[in-house]
Length: 227
Length: 332
View 1 (cartoon, helix red, strand yellow):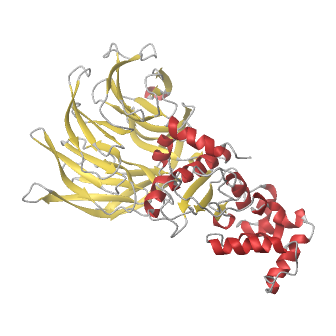
View 2 (cartoon, rainbow over the protein chains, first blue to last red):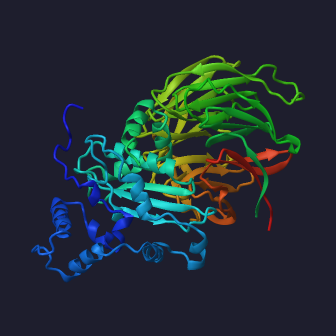
View 3 (cartoon, each protein chain N blue to C red):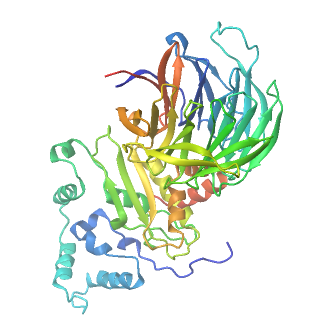
């Protein structure tokens, strides 16, 4: 590869990536990370964490959420609220089972390295927490589903398929086989959206790709930075 | 009602394909191995494991040559292997088959996805990600293969090929969402119909075993099973086919395999692990008469075939769990 396809991508710092520690403010921290403006805004707001007098603090709602950030995380209550939000099954079942949630999927994917830049998919906002959908009862005897919508850094990114394959391989290896994994390009994020989506979700093509040593070594390199 | 007769753990990895002939069930797997199980007399015993160093990648498809002990296997390594039993004819007394490699057929540019023998055993059809269907003519011994046609009308991977059980007719299913029907005009194979309607990859198809009423069923990524009916030829020797029925929708994900039994019933299975059986009440009117969720636990089911063993009609499924499951359909 002589030239970068996207030479100047927007990059988030690692400590800006959503994590369990962010607690109730996750939604705000993520927002809609697809455009540069929102990323800039977000970066600004992160600075606000330290200088509470910034002019960006106009919205009371935002301020409330920032305050929540400073509060010490109460892990037990966080988990409870997550379960009621993300689990569609009744409470008695979830007590026994331990369903996978979107944050766990995000943590599996965020540190995959972009095939082009030495930067992670989380930092590039190719993978975003709010674009991960999980349907899991936690019951090992039932099928479960993960849908990941990825946002390539530019709409004609020729590496979108490779990124998607890396994500699929990562999830295939990490998750119990009861999970059905669907990888999609986020709507409007790519010129050949349907074509790439069809390829990424064709079981046979994916299986054949995984027996291609050359392709697999590229994918392994992408996954080598996973924690 | 579908009851599980036998569950056989045969492979370390995903079973892609199964095929049965003379009570012998062959399986092809991602573990690059082919195994053969004797189903007769309720034995279900493993009678052969073929050399797993012949293919360098997954075995995607296996097919028995009718009335013989010859097996063809198509692999992701883009080759087809032909296996034969040394001394055919005598009964399987020792419990060991000892199939041996007879030939390797090369030609496809990349992954072979499906292989199928014609009903008379004269032709072997193969298809690949290279978008082509090849028709090979085999000699009596099965050692020599001559490619007599390369059919290149599909615009994408060809996923599956199947011959009509009695007519010289081939159907191919593709990633381009269509099924194509091919006919032989004096050793010149030509497309005579394109069946369009599926809204996703067509993973497999199967002909009804009735000559007077030419029909085909198909299963697709769009999670529907469709029945197509031949209406007649036009002046240019093109066949007119219509989609006669979309079977009652029960699958929630891709349908990887469909099979039309000699009993008239259609079976379907796929990514959702569901095995469904459909019966035709009157022509074109189908209903589900049996279903089994999680036919291979929480894993995907890749293939279903009808079997006729010791006078009983059974079903066999192969899954990502490396198992072959044998099912019996009971009247309720």
